[in-house]
Length: 323
Image (cartoon, rainbow, N blue to C red):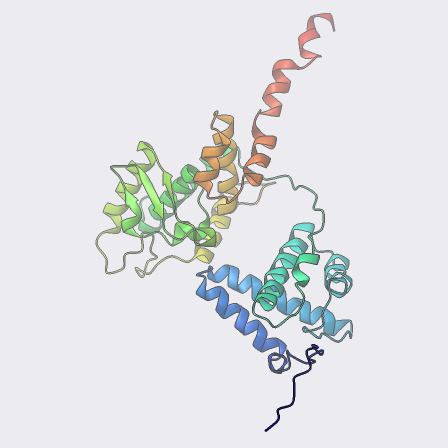
């Protein structure tokens, strides 16, 4: 029996991705979010990714441009999403955040075989102008710390939280998610088990802060929950509740010209750490930054107190006897 020989020439196989293309945009997005969840990304990051990618879909729809995720190009994203955000007056940092989220989505689709081309590699952030970072003065920090009524549970709790923010520079989510077991008084450190990007780190605190926290623990008492900071119902305090409290205290302290928020405490901690002679490498570890970029910016802004240096070296002041 004779057999037919195979032709030893490869022919083009078309539509190899046909099975993959059965999923719609929303299904692909859901698959991406589930993958992010498996990597233990924070709920805030997940929400930002989902919102950003949905915003891209809305941008295409509002411009009546068909969005075929399987054939999308970097040029289409630049023309119909990035330019759309810029025309809406979004800040450079906001635009770049959206771009980074879309890049992660496209990278996932490529790695999983949904896309045949890694469009994410061709997509770049826009050049952003550096923003001036707002910080509190010593007087403003003192005024804020005076606002909580320390004769009440919630007042002393808020006072303690502000002290820790100023001492450690931790993020608001890290502060609100602290557990009793994260405090180590002998070592004088707080262990943040789930920082940004799921990274754990150790943050030192000193005797004054330790004294404040110990008193708070006495006031808090033994509870069923292991959450360190709780509300009046003995449930973990939410980030929203703390943000609202801070705004109230800011108004009471008559603080103007600077946003009163937990993140401003973070920037303020970095400023005084640098001004007091702290090194940027240690500051990076304390704040939990993955790179030195932000810390370098802190150093650039705060390595010398411009006003004090100018007062010391002012040409006019040093010639005032002649003027």
